[in-house]
Image (tube, rainbow, N blue to C red; front, side, top):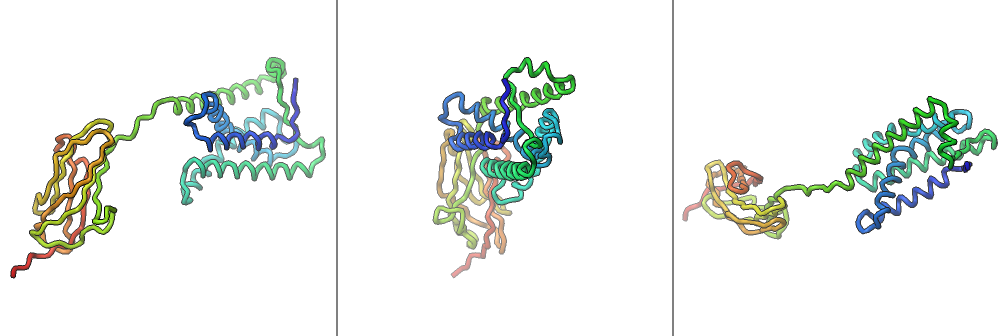
Amino acid sequence: MTLNIKNEFIPILLIGLVLLALIAAGVEGLPAPLPMLRLLLGLAYVLLVPGYALQAALFPRADDLDGPERLALSFGLSVAVVPPMALLLDALPWGIRLWPIVVMEALFILACSALAWFRRQRLTEEQRPVLAVEFAPRTWWATQDRTSRLLYSMLALALLMAAVAATAIIVTPKPGERLTEFYILGPEGLAENYPRQATAGQPVTVTMGIANHEGLPAEYRVEVHDSTGLIGHAGPLRLDAEETDERPVSFVPAEVGDDVKVEFLLYRDGGVQPYRTLHLWIKVVEETTQ
């Protein structure tokens, strides 16, 4: 049985709407078959549909290309147009993220489909290509010549490898990023309005924050230095995984100058090298005597 589709852009649009709904729903909480359906449709709309719409706009006549040539060109053009889209998105404020990619792909497919439809409307019925979907794989395969069989086999293998790779990325557990947040806050509890002037020999206090995202308990200590050496410290303190500690830490600047660099060195689990570093630039004046 063969199904002849005269306007394939209608099912492309309808299936694209289904894919948009699955993307909007997210992966979490969907029944088991739907994430896989989203994956397969996403692969098709990245690796095949953009190129198909583009080649349909470039070659609107049925005798411009045969079936295998259109399929091969669809795959090749799809692979060719995705990198320029990524470069364009990277230069735009939205960046390379899920929804900007989806919107740009959708606009590209819609634009090419509209151009292909417009060009086909200027042709006679006999000149317009018809998409034939064969429901008898053995009969269809038997009618293909050797070159067509090789081409279809290579395309099927490429799509299979892409599907396997994407599936492996989805089902493989992703280890969380291991890090420790180390930050300093101003008087209002924000990363601003830090002390800009101090007096040598007089204590200066800021709020220090440490957040343990290492996935296991860790012990921290902090040293505060200027060019003269150690001028303050905090800890040691032990934080469990995902625990955050914010506390005041004081230091007594000893170096005098307009731009004194005060360094905060965070050490983890008894290490001898700083694990994280922060610094403030402070104007330090000499202490006046009465």
